[in-house]
Amino acid sequence: MFCGMRRVRISTTVDSDLLARARASVPGTNDAALMDRALEELTRQVEQKHEREVLARLPYDLDPELNLPQAPLPDGIPYDGPVPVDVQQLADERRRQLR
Image (cartoon, rainbow, N blue to C red; front, side):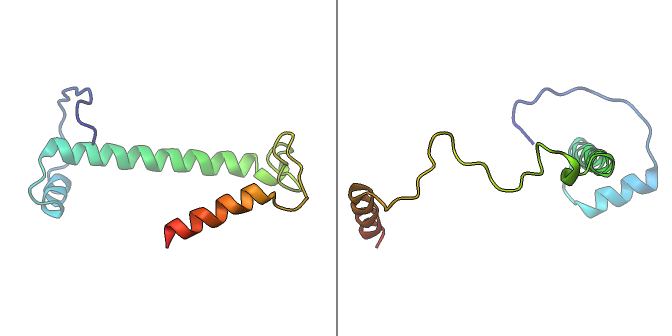
């Protein structure tokens, strides 16, 4: 939970047995914190369900932008030559510093 988050007051009735079970499962937690956790979990579950539904309709392997045969090369850096001496020296120096 973030400090300074905007809070709103809600007024509702809930299942008394379920609330008692929730209170017992996390002793010392106030009802506001329980509701925050419940809302976070509900939101997470709804988002996961939505993602699964989207993937079922539009699988990655059918998307030409996501299903690439190989990782793209970084822009302008196709390099297959030996490691430059100064780069190797820098790597060696950093390895020595880590010991």
